[in-house]
Amino acid sequence: MHRKDPTAPGARVANFGEGGGGGRVNVQYEHDLFGYDVFKSNYVATKRTSLIVGPEGTIPPMLPEARQRNAARAAYNRAHGTDRVQNLNLETRCILSNRQLVPVFPIEDSNTHFQIVQGKRYVAIYQELNHDVRVIPTDGRPHLEKELRQYQGDSVGHWEGNTLVVDTTNFTDQTAFRGSTENLHLVERYTRVSDDMLIYRFTVEDPHTWAKPWTVEVPWMKAEGPLYEYACTEGNESIGLILGAARAKEAAEAAKTAK
Amino acid sequence: MKKIVLVMAGGIALLLAGAPVWAHHGFAEEFDADKPVKIRGAVVKWELINPHSWLTIDAKDENGKVTTWRFEGPPPNTLFRLGFTKESLPPGTEVIVEGYAAKDGSNRASGRNVTFPDGRKLLLGLSGGADGRPDK
Image (cartoon, rainbow over all chains, first blue to last red; front, side):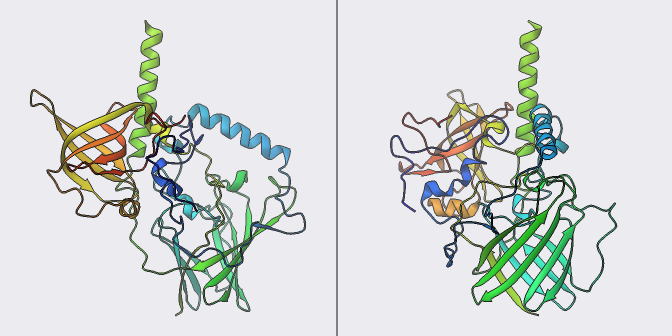
């Protein structure tokens, strides 16, 4: 990764973008501007360049009903995304960080460690961001009733040899993994292949979103501890800033039309 | 009980995928790239917290009137990589802080850099274009 001097004239700048999510998330997380390794970890020993596994090597086509559904959501979001705090995203509200979305997708952020603790009847995954624990029972229990929905779904696990297989259902419509619905069915497979690497593999299916299931494989590298405490609400003034900005804009527009 | 500490693999840079349905929080929703501010004042406090640090400055105008400004900065681990230490900004330090004003009209801004009394400058998280302004 070449080192860039961000103070040099003409240096590449962060792309702010207008509106919700048009540009990069936040310029203070532009780690590559400062020339250091985003993940503070070893690079992938396997040097794989594609996440998708399977003969087609691509995500299957999205169904027309899904495109329409997502377009409607995006339109609603543009029109009402700052109407009220409940319309802001779960990460802004410190309810569920993007790092905690399930399935786990590579993502740029700070404090991205997981700590996996195995017990006899549970496996627990402690997520540094946002100091939450994903609890996966391995005692053979069934899923929750379908009326009960959770942001990270409901997970049940079992062992197949050395591989932990986790089956997750009961999502809400708030996380919409890549435009999917609350009916997403996720199967994750965790296999430790060496002292410093675990292969994380997941298959997702949603008959209301994709023509067929698809599978991703990502190696996870062992990291040095310790994990740090992460406080989200403490330094997060985004809700006030976003809603305040929206109200200020509305007031300015109202004043203009009143003239 | 076995304990394994693992982190996501590097080397695959991806834009955020699977973003939640509602509005994604970005710079432009909170701060105005067309309203740069440059405040000279004394440090009141420096909160080294997640997900953003916050630097509070008291600026005094020529009549002695004090205005308090707060600048959003990166999280502590990023600050330390940028060259700050916990001792960098004790209360009372006279600094100049540049940033971009909040859109809600409050005296808050997204911090861009800090200039110390000895003239040393450290980034808070933004780089400037040729004329010192961010690209649109």
